[in-house]
Image (cartoon, rainbow, N blue to C red):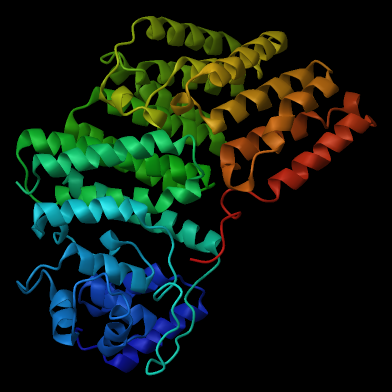
Length: 497
């Protein structure tokens, strides 16, 4: 491994463990510094020799037989033209190493597998959760020395995944500015992207983050190869969608800087795909990230940058952009501009013709209930609009409650309820505010994403008004909000792997 001795690698590994670094980050650092494959790097990150791995591997009778020479050849794939691994071998090794199958494959390796093997890996990858660093339920054999645990608190692990994914997106974006794909691969990517876009607004982020990172990595690797123009367009579209979802994930975990890096990669992909719908959607995303980060002037700039693209598309992204712009103008205190943007969003709704993003669904589309929530989120900032904000928020809540399950969004429903509570606080109806906010404060910790916590804290701030001083209801509601915000989705994660 590029002149690195076993002692050097173990020292690097031990230093990173002392620094509190996670398994995947250690493996990636070993690979980058020492050379070699990801498969070898994960083994070395555990401090295991090849014989150690073979002993563990043989405990899994479901996998194809493997011996040390075979493992050695697998660790050289694909650089030296060695024989491609079987999907079952990679899946078994992923279970041993405590990671997912796709993370064990180097760039260009996935597309060099047989199509049937590649599809097996991609399908199985979605089923992998977090695994212990060895066969589940079986004690390690006595001939293998025990290793130090590399398992870090899951909150740290998730945050590192966000940061590492953002850096990878940035590197890709720099490269992209300056046919290895067949129809089966494209279909599989599209199916997985559709599943994730729809699951995103219904499931805790902690259950989806690994799949998002893996699938984006696959898309980037494939784009580093060569494709026919039509295939390249589709790949850029999928890569842009996945980068956009990771931008949203970074934002939801309270990391606006990583979110912006991912969003820039998404916009570059949209440009390469020539897709005005994705260009519009990404500008809306960038504006939203800036809005919640407390950068309203930057949020307004991104919303205005997207206007040209929104004028050339009829997908629901053309509704999202002015709806998002309305919220920004309201925060900036420009009620006239805010209400005008609401009207533009209403006009765009009447012109909607669903595009490819709307077909994906989930967070890639902007349905009517979400538009009502944005309307309420705008009016709640405008003096004299409190009653209207209360009514529109109620409309949004009812619309979500009556929508099919696959169209519901726990985060947007929570946002509408928080806006209703805020409007009622402003009108002096503290009991009504507490009633509106109750369902938000009952959300499980792993659904308390950044925007929801921020919305609840707006209510907390409004309750500081001198007119509410001394009111028991105000004090109790503030206390509940404070307790609620102490454990958010970024840190309330399942323990163990």
